[in-house]
Image 1 (spheres, rainbow, N blue to C red):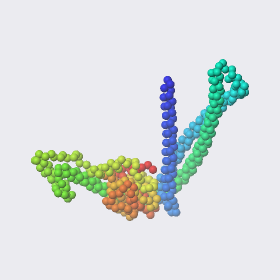
Image 2: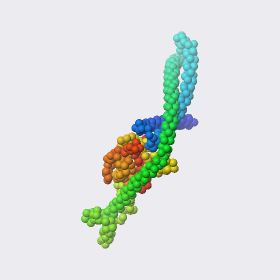
Image 3: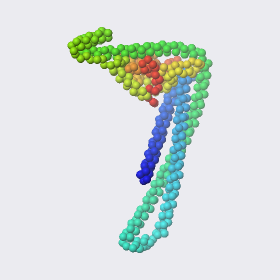
Image 4: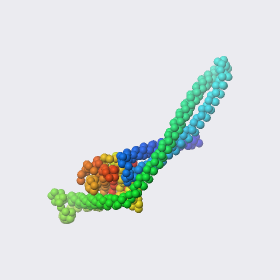
Length: 451
C-alpha cells in the first residue's frame, strides 16, 4: 500500500509538471504569435503609408488593408486567448493565496498555543525541577534533550511561518501584477477593436469608390490576365523543356554508365556527340563479343530514371525542406493566396492564382528559397520572372527588376535574385511566388517556413 501511495503521488506530480510545461508553451506560443501579427500589421501600415499622400483608392491598397484587417482579427483572437490564460493564472493564484492564508493562520494559532504553554512553565525553577524530578540520570538526560528539541522546534515553527508569509506576500504581489496585465490586455483589445472598425469603414469606402470604376477595372483585369496567361504559358514551356532535358540527361547518363560497365571507353570508343542509338549498338556489339569470348557480361543497372542521381538528390533535399523554405523576401504580406478566389471588385470574376502574391516595401530584394539552376523569362512592362530548377521541383519568382542572376547560373539558398518590381500605376511592390512539382503548380504556403 505504501509503494502504491508513492506511485500515485509521483504520477500526480508528473502530471502537474507536464501541465505547467504545457501552460508555459501555450503562453510562449501566444507571445510569439502576437509579435508576428503586430510586425505584419506594422509592415502593412508602412506599405500603405508610402501611398498616403495620394488618396486615390487602388486594388493594391484594398488587398493590403484586407490582409491587415485579417491580421488584426487574428491579433484580437490571440489577445483573447492570452486574457483567458491570465484569468486561469489569476484564479489559481487566488486559490493558492486562500490556501496559504489558512495555513499561515493555522500555524500562527498552533504557535500561540505553544507560547502560552511555555509561558505557564516559563520560570527557570520549573524547568530545573522538571529535570531534577527525574527518576534517574538517564531520564534527566532525556528530559534535557527534550527541552532542547522543543526549543529548536519552536524556532523552526517561527521560520516556517516567516517562509509561508513570504510566499504568501509573493503570491499577492504576483496576483496584483497579473491583474494589471489583464487590464492592460483588455485595454489593448478595446483599442484594437476600435482600429478594426475604423479600417473596415475605410475599406468599405475604398471598395465603393472602386466599384464606380468596375467596368474599367474589369477591362484592365482582362488585359492583365491575358498578359499573365502568356507569361504562365512561357513558364510552363520552360518547365516542360527542363523536364524533357532532365529526362534526356538521365537516359544518356544510364546509357553511358552501361557502356562503361561493358568496357567501352569514353573518348576512344564513343564521345558526347555519339547518338544514343549508335551508342546502344556499340554496347550490344561489345556484349556479343564478350559472350563469344566466354567473358562475363554486365547486365543493365535497373529501371530508367527521369533524373540523374545528382538531380534526384537535389529534388529529395528540396522535398525534405517542406515547411522550412526561406521566404523569397525578407518582409512581406501575402495579399493573394493560391487557388481560385473571387475578385474583390469585379463582380463574377474568378481568379485562379497558381502561386501567392506577396506585397512588400519598395526596393525589397527577392532571394532564392532554395539552390538550383536559373532560367529567366521577360515580362511585358520591364520586369522578369526567375525560374530555379531543383531536380523535378521548380520555384518561380515573378516581377523582378534589376536582375542579379543570369540564364544557366547556379544559385545558392538565400542568394539575391534582384529587386521586386515597383508598379508606378498600382503604386506597390508585389512578388508573385510559385512552387512546381514536374508540370503541376503547388500551393507555396505549406512549403514556406512559419514566420
